[in-house]
Amino acid sequence: MRPDRIIVGEVRGAEAIDMLQAMNTGHDGSLTTLHANTPRDALARLETMISMASLNLPERGMRQQIASAIDIVIHVSRLSDGKRKIVQISEIVGMEGEVITMQDLFLFDRMGMDADGTVLGTFRATGIRPRCADRLQAYGVSLAETLFANSDLGYPKEKAV
Image 1 (cartoon, rainbow, N blue to C red):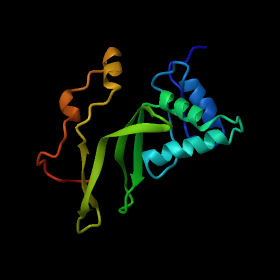
Image 2: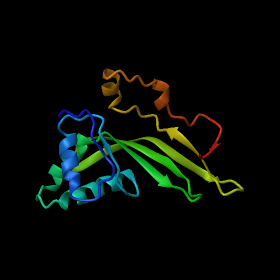
Image 3: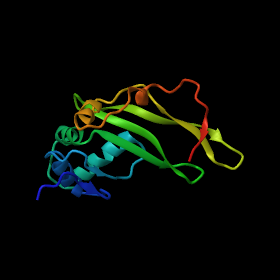
């Protein structure tokens, strides 16, 4: 068998190392979910789950596995109005010393609430073009440069859906 993608519903424990090993063997486009408060917290939680496998991997080794396997972290949060919304999209760009480096690509700017209690805000680009865009282009996925343009250009504020 030669799977092109690996999709894991949710990672909760020691199986995280098996998932990373599989992702690091050429299964581009694989995905999984895990619970955390922020993209940075997700990486820390993933490290904790890897250590649950009792393989005695050094921290740097774990972090290198994570940085090599994962390109994008999408953070979905339940807002105070009860609706779930993508609030942050971050890219893992590599390692700097012992630290996994990330950059935010998109952020949800919360503006307040309307009279009905619905959270108001705008999802905007940070102006950073992801490093993985060139790889997507090689696979035939063309992303417009304007997609990543910083959208603090006076667009009307919209209701969160």
